[in-house]
Length: 188
Image (cartoon, helix red, strand yellow):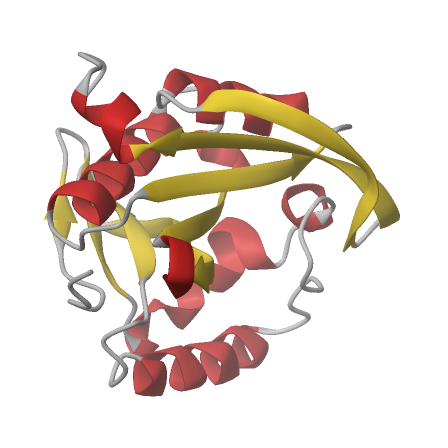
């Protein structure tokens, strides 16, 4: 694997880039303050813009580690930070990256997260040298699974009471794609 860190990726509608401390306002107002957005996530709603700023200070320092992959999703149309996507777990021994993501509700159901996930999958396979990319979602959040499927990932199973999020203990559905599958697909 090539640990390249969080490099800038670009798609038709998005700039997928490292976060900066200046993203606190957008982060707070576009997704982090929403209990609707965070209900299936593992971190609590941010109560203030300062909460978002504190997290961003940590994340910006974490970019010193080339094994850190944590992107801001910027909407090209208005240059606002609208969400995040990144590697939330890594298993180096099998060259696996588990991806997690969230996006502001105003940007739901427009194919934006699928576009971002495809770009990250492409980077993880073609540039960073991973062999497997996976993601999981609460079974009560099937829209997240639709994003994974649309990005070329395949359903691998449902694990009962295998996760915990802001709603409590939950069942998790796992999707994944291997490098071989990626190479042999025309989705990307």
